[in-house]
Image (cartoon, rainbow, N blue to C red; front, side, top):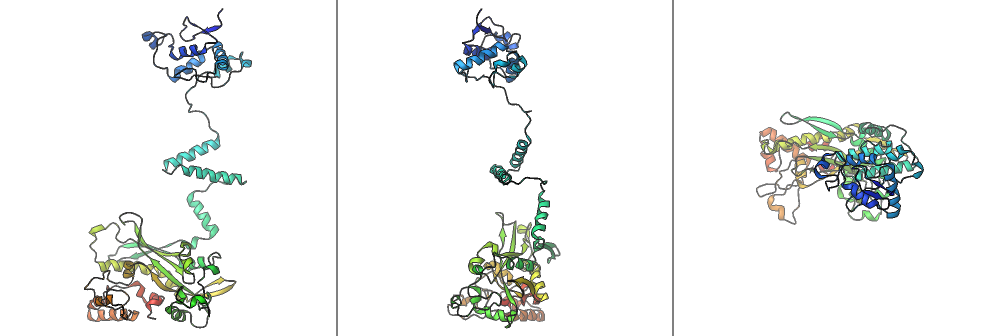
Length: 473
């Protein structure tokens, strides 16, 4: 009797020897079962299209034990990891002869590669990772975000910590952190103001006192390396014989500092001066400028220039919204009306500073003792367009403008004079111009000053007295 097997699918007459497993597998790859439609057309042994995956699954269960034994022994002799030239049909797991009597177990062993399965159960931790990656892909986030999240979780678990508490959603986590770090007072207050045409806008403002405390009570910020050299932070006085006070450098070395310090804090060294440096500049986040606003931020004059150049030493005061949003070229409002609306928003932005002044001072613990501080605005920083708007100045310096520069009364012809002695505007000049305009019912006085006849928020009595450069000294 021949030591071989016949094809279990077509029952062909060919007997394959156990040492010729390659021939048997070549036959299997082209064989068609008896009774199939392909066999009626092409014959059982004629070449045809490769059978589909379902066919080989059923064929797996049709092969008898001798076929599996043949393949197993041939694998050892012939090293048939690639049985055919074009197709790969090999055992997925080794065959154990000790279980030869149990054909049910042999039946579960696939002698050929089978397609993937969708119904295989995943362990919970694997399923969590699959769902996490799926969510990241659907949100359009980069795939590296998944690796970063997994790295974070692995480092957390490897440190000996375990997630024994349910995860919090974003809003709950935000409130939880607010309660821990006591950041609720730092949240903005949304003030609603009415514009010239009766419409209402919202101006997000911040508590300036709380913003100041976040700096002066921060041990990392209030260090000698961040203070202006030659400056006494408790009194605002210049340290005698300090080399940095010999020449102009930090804020307190300027000529206007001593006068402003005496005006707001007196000569008794009773108050700690907290002079604010305010910066404002319109910024946008899109190409066309529609998504724009004007942030107002501030820092303290006691910090040195290196510290003031760092973002962490600045705090927000307010955000003036884009009042022209959605209007485009169809906005028919006059330029003076637009400027007036901006100053209405500025009045709301500086309201927090006014409230500090109404209380007279602010007290807090610093350096192990209770100190009383005086707060005022020392000067503003901005670009030409922004500074012109704040002072109500014409945003033009062309010929025909009587006083092109916003701070002084120099004429257009004086602009190229290198030895001119400027006569600066004072708060009293604006007050006198307003009185003359009301008396004569004419705006010519403002036109001669190259300024718009608006109610300037910075010139309000309750705010102008807090701006040292507005008081005329």
